[in-house]
Image (cartoon, rainbow, N blue to C red; front, top):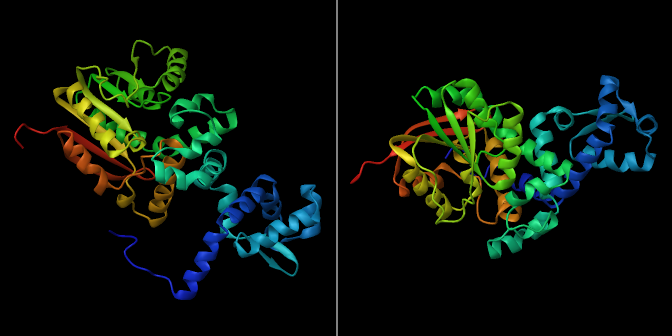
Length: 359
């Protein structure tokens, strides 16, 4: 494994890192307040000359006390610097203010995860999403997304789509270089892949299979674009093991879907995919595996996202490593015939076929 095999810090650096962890929630809220209150933007506009506390307070229409405590915290958090009584943003402050990935992650953690993470220990002990009670009364978050307040719903969808949307233009040619006429999109969510597919391939028909909430949203979008003759819908609760999938498909597509399930559930779903596919059919799985990342920070983001699944989503899934995930594919009767890493921000595309009997 490229990352995480050595303890690289000195004892002093490790103790400093421990304090960062201890005060992590404080630093998070300070950074978000500086962003949302416009303080980082005010400092940025001052340029290299910087800006004094009094002027920041006046421009932000906030008390000097409130601005001062935030900025003094931000100094040690390395979001700003101070010279001759004037503040300027650091590179980290710039990314808090402007980086789309950071914004999506911060909004998701704040709006969806923050309160629920208080219940993480209960989730680990019980295997249930104990923190979900902070958002609503549902068995898993997937039944509840459609009922979240608009701001929270937007943060959830922005996060969900951010890590897959940039991969779609890359993988469309990889999938549709094959003669696929009838594709089942499992966990199709709001229909982004299905709509991209019928736009790219003029012959394919896509069936979206998902829970009632997501399929309702997707159907509205499909109807608005008059694509009802190219995209159809199948409503299923995929956690019900005895619920079969419709059959007769050339290909099955799953994008950032199986990470929503436990290993046993993944095997169950894939076995039903096996039965749904034509004999020569192909299974395409797009997943961000943390042990296939080019950069350590990408692996870090995926590993931390796993805790959302534990505390809030369902209590038993995660952003998997390929080392954990690939055996599930084999157990279900498939063989991986092609793997493409480093797609978009973080994705790996697995192309699978039914394993020959006896192999």
